[in-house]
Image 1 (cartoon, rainbow, N blue to C red):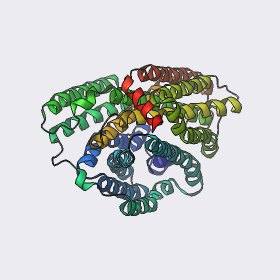
Image 2: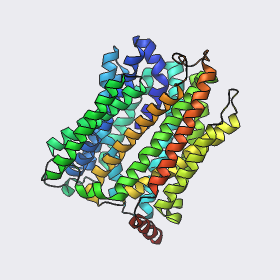
Image 3: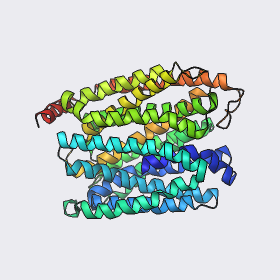
Image 4: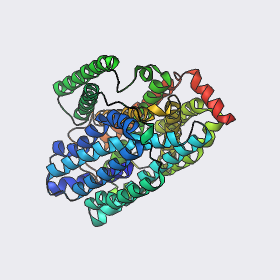
Length: 455
């Protein structure tokens, strides 16, 4: 649901802009409002799942996401749509870490958990592919609203099925409350960082970006101090000190940042350089989904054979190779290169994502799965936002004026193509950095991978 919704909205932005007459600055809030609440409240959502029951938090998040999707699809003003998107993000912040925690606590570390997380990767990829294909069709043939309203029946079914088949873990909770001061500090800090990234990507002034980054850093610093003194810390210090958690989360963030930036660059290339219509661009981009589906299908077996750390590093190498090859795209559109390289890119990305999740979640006990899942998702959200902002900044650095509204080849297509190719090289460099960071995962994670193979 979460990935499907993002893919649908990505293609629907031009229609949304036309419906409400939004300026480019106001249009970005349709995306930014979601990102702020989704990333900002992720740690709270994860800890709430640990403390108050994962099924309960997951079900509440799904129902809230469905209702806010209904409000977004029925919006009569741009402000109403932005507000509904913010509630969607807040709902997703409780839904995503609870879902991951339910998977990792249902299946103990080993082959079964690896398969479960690989299936999770396949479902994410399926949502992505379906979002682009169905979103392109709905946006073109019906309305951009249909892509949001479809979440309502899906969410109701998911919530009902969850209450039937998922065991309630309410008796497995801690008898304590969330650290309110720490929660306020970390949420405000992450929101400030995401706002700074969004402002940078949207062409915001230097003062706004720098001040937001400074405020975010100060708030997160205050959170570290406050949480260290709390009786019931939101993020126990032992988790921050665990290199499997920190290095694994950082690797996932960097890999996702590159993947998100690459997706945006491909969309710019297909629609603003080659002049593809949204639905045609969506069909081409399904190559990424095909690579992702294959990666999800093979991830579990590769982790069992090589261990999570080696699989993580090798997946990143494949992703980086695919991204680097995409820097060779041309003005005339070599579809063979485009499809092959993009398939490799997403194949490696999904392999790396599943491996990183296994590394991070295997490092902690069931009691901390929610908060670790929230931290991992928050890192991924920050990485995604930074990757998109960096890709846009590099791609449009030498473009005279604003790129044309897609689809359509404008007078700056040649300049944009040069920028896209340059930005692809930057995205490949980000994957290279992720590969280096993956080598920091401690040897204990490698031992866990060996144990998984024995099991």
